Image (tube, rainbow, N blue to C red; front, top):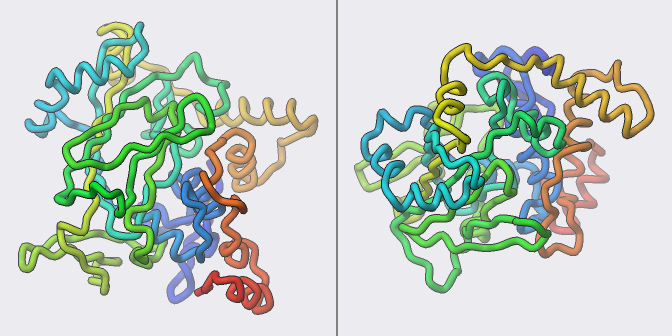
Length: 360
């Protein structure tokens, strides 16, 4: 939204600010697209209330995924979208007056031991505002704020598992978690070949950390991180900027998920209108920010006109986005990241190391 600053040269950190990452051209540092998710996880420790250094928290967040926005090009996925089981589950989740399905995305998500899915809502769609025009943290704030509900488009998300292991004792953790109308989370075990259905853009959800006692790959937020497969030895290796790391896994180590998503429309005509190029007038970034600023000024009784873009972004997230605090943690704050986020020197580092933070 205007927060971008020039990227730095190596060996300095490319993006020193803990909430910023390189843009796709690696010329600017920008807020991470889902900084609402990462910031909440890093500062609270997520669903499990972990107390661990910034580098470990980032490693837990950096699961591996492939996002496909044209499901019709994959016949097996198209078949799944049209099967009766999916259709029935989807229509039971969509509003009763919005039963026309518009499949638009499927994701393949892989987690290695020690990784998690942080508390979040999915990418939100509005008439005139989608992830293809605006950062997803801004869309999440638009949904939480209630200021744009006349434009909101409901959707259905089916989360299914296809990993090779069974865990009848529940020792691996990794369960799917969601919050309905209260603060009590519901946990669903990640049983292979089972699935859960919710409107992920309305219902807050997450995953329990998979094998939480394991350390995740400690990767750099400023680098391109991939998980590559080799048939030679059935080996999955984490690569960083094209170079292999020491982190390797077998297929049986992975928590594997496929996520199907479809929008819910009232009529076939509205579905066609939304998907017709150029048919829906786009909201402007300035209009969205003016709406937020006016509402925040009303709440705070002071002007927000001259806030720098980064400060404005953080204030929007702080004002509107409300993710649950850790489920069972006496201190709902990951104090091990204070030194990284605020600075503080050796004295603060010594203090937090003395209480078990093991700061890098």
